[in-house]
Length: 404
Image 1 (cartoon, helix red, strand yellow):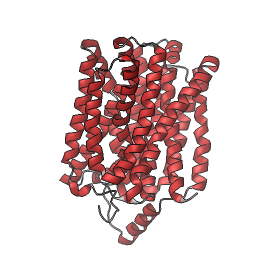
Image 2 (cartoon, helix red, strand yellow):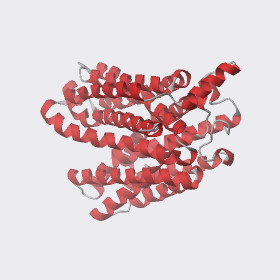
Image 3 (cartoon, one colour):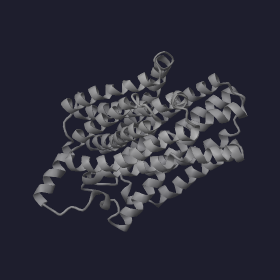
Image 4 (cartoon, one colour):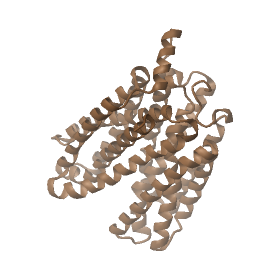
């Protein structure tokens, strides 16, 4: 297996394990709430604390990966979220659950951007979109695996046994460390750094070094926030919306979830090739506007066929764009700060966007599904406007470091 394929396999596996880890909480939440006798709000804090851990982990490990190497730090992040996941199964109170989920979040937040940086530095410019899409689909694989494991383990062994599966990534980390070499582009940059011997500014400071860089960083954070806010708002609340508005049973809403997830996977793979062929700005522009239209029109869907097909279409456009963010963010920053940028921007968006379900819940409680879908449509329109502010000259298909 050549180096390019190894980076994709390692990054896909990492994101699959991360996605599986995050979904364990969703499937086990009812049992955790019951065992520790806590209310829903207290249980909901588990997800919020995990997101905070992801943000901090993204920043810390992004900086470390840019300084000490992608592969080395990547394996540490996998080990950390494996440890946090396994320890969750040993928690004796909700406070310990918070601590262990924070630890898992630290590792998961660091893993995403490092894997994306590895792929961006291994693949040629005209194929980075599709390579990024292959990696992004890993999160959906993780959801599917978590659902299967939960169905098998939870009824028989309980929620603690589910989290003990978290030791599996340790084996994966050892394999990656043994079989994957460091990024050649990063090694070359380190060599040049030693030769030039320049006083380098803080990695985070470099994300805001000039007015143009600052605007780019802020714009990308807004776009990432919308991506996560839209995804969370749709996936967490739409099954409940459909049960109320269409009278769907729980089993029918589960079928909707599968149909939407399939649409998302196809959308990701399509978006990656679309991005390579037509460029990032055109690809994101089309998918953002299509997402705004799709979620708005979906509020008028009726009948089982309309609901299932509409869900797949919404998933295709709204989450298809997720495939492009790793390649997109990487294209704006040189190799010296690429992991820092990818991790900081996306995890900042993940932390802020994670609050979207709260707002959607309030809208549903005070208004109706149509207003909630209008809110989501407006989010995508905002992201489209922000995307237009990015300078055209920086939207060349995945610049090399010399072009940045």
